[in-house]
Length: 307
Image 1 (cartoon, helix red, strand yellow):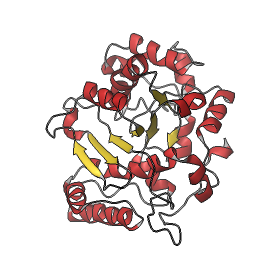
Image 2 (cartoon, helix red, strand yellow; image 1 turned 180 degrees about the vertical axis):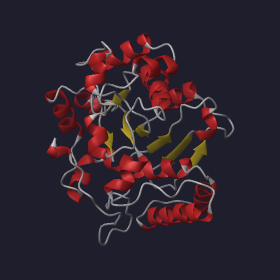
Image 3 (tube, helix red, strand yellow; image 1 turned 60 degrees about the vertical axis):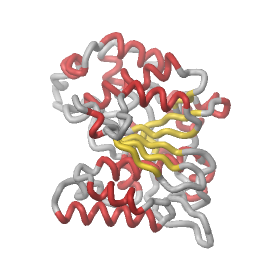
C-alpha cells in the first residue's frame, strides 16, 4: 500500500525543455482525451471533453455543443479513437461493499456485468448500498484514500455518476469495443496491443498531488473566477497549450467543470507515459505494477485513480 502513496510534486517543466507538458517533459506522442463526467438528469450541460492532440492546441467541448453529446455518443467516440482517455467517475467499489452486495470480487469485467444486472436504476443502487453500516461510514476504496478523492463511489453526491459511468460507458465499452480498448490497470498485459486506453481520473486528486487546494474555484463569485484564472495560468505556464478561447470558456464556467476536464490532462499525460512520469515522480507506478498490487490485495474490483 505504501508503494502507491503519491509523492507531492509541483507543476514545473524540465529545465531546457522546449516543448514541455505537465509531465515536465516532451508533449505527448498520442492524443489525450479527458472527460469531466456527470450523472445528472440533464447531464450534457455538465459533460466536458478536453482533447490534446500532439503538436496542436488543446480543444474543449461541452456536451451541449452541436452536435450534442450523450452517453452513447461518448462511447462511440472512445471506441473509434486512438489515444488515452481519462474519465472522471469511479470505475469500481470498495471490495468490502462488493462482497456485501454479493457481486464478484475477483474479476472486474464480471463485476461490471453483475453491477448492471443487479441495479436497474441509480436509485436502486443507492438504496441497496444504504443505510450505512453501524459505524456510519461509507466504504471507501484503497485508491480513494491514496489519491484523496472527495468521497466514496456510492456517496449521495456521487452515486449517480458512478452508476451511469459503469452502466452507460464502461459496460458498452466492454461489450462492444473490447478488442480495441484497454481499461487500465486491469488490461495492463494487453494494453500495448490496443489503440485505446481508458482509465479513471479525479481533478481534485490532481490538485492535491501537487499541493494545491482542490476548492475555491467553483462558483460565480469574483474570488472563484480569479481562482480559475490562476489555475489556467498555471497550466499554461507549464506547457499545456491552452488557446485564449479555451481559457475564457473555462473561466466563464462557474461550476468549474470545464477547468476540471483541463486539469485531468495532467494525469492523462502521466498515464500515457508512465516510464517518463516515474522519472519525474519516483513513486509513480506503471499499469502492470498497479494491477499486480490490486490483485495481491484482493482489490481488483476497486480500480486505481491516475493523478
